[in-house]
Length: 372
Image 1 (cartoon, helix red, strand yellow):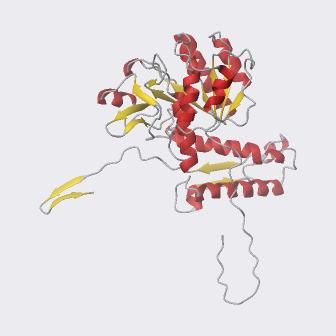
Image 2 (cartoon, rainbow, N blue to C red):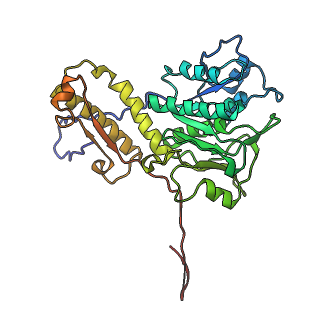
Image 3 (cartoon, rainbow, N blue to C red):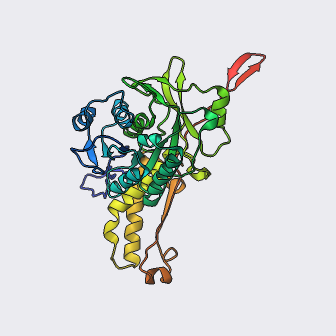
């Protein structure tokens, strides 16, 4: 906002564009799982705001039941989640049922995360196919991020897919009332939601204590941690660690991408959020005359939105020119594109990068020890 030096009494008019408030929530997962859904209907998303609602729909958790859906949803609410959708897939554990559940949430605009703890009940081949289907779903829509569970095996046996729009977590968790260890995706999704509220979607959902967790299925050694999360690695497994005096925490913030531009979860989710904003706020420009007035309008609205991201601290740089650019003009829209009915806008963002490796140097000198 321009600040004017009011030295002469009078009435001054200033045009102030309000910072757009978030019009949709983030950290809202869809949980796909196998459960008794006779009273609710298979593949019908059910919105939940509290954990007791799950028990009201599907009954109390039974440790003898061979599924993980209930523990994941409970872990979501225990760790700060406030809104989720549950998609019951029925009681038969099949790959086809899971794929049908993905189709059921495709039109659900409220969600931005996908969790499917019960795919770990499938055979190894089906599990890999199911994870590939989740990744394809998220990348096709462009508005969702997948939280995947690694197998409950040692670090060297973990199979890792590749994706810009997914992250994987290990090991599994020991929680109350469960006879066996459970996948961590629900607890992690709750941390995503809590982190989004506390610092924004551009903040890394890492170094948070996992609530409701009693123990881990594996306590990785330093050698195993280096294998899963090497400093020079691009993409990797995000480890959950029991840290002395600090509890059990998420200790990683990387996607499964091999592209260094999409290495960090917060950077990828920032662009996903921009995608969602564009879909919601620029949908009404369809069928408008593709001319200079339209280009100016699109560029103005996107620039204003990107300025709000900069003011929130989501972008790096000392000035807005260093943080982002928006370009919609005759150069991005040559005659051949206009004649084909397209309007093209380029957006460049410089997301903040998390401080993964903090180095403290102890300098020994004649005057003593100094910290640099």
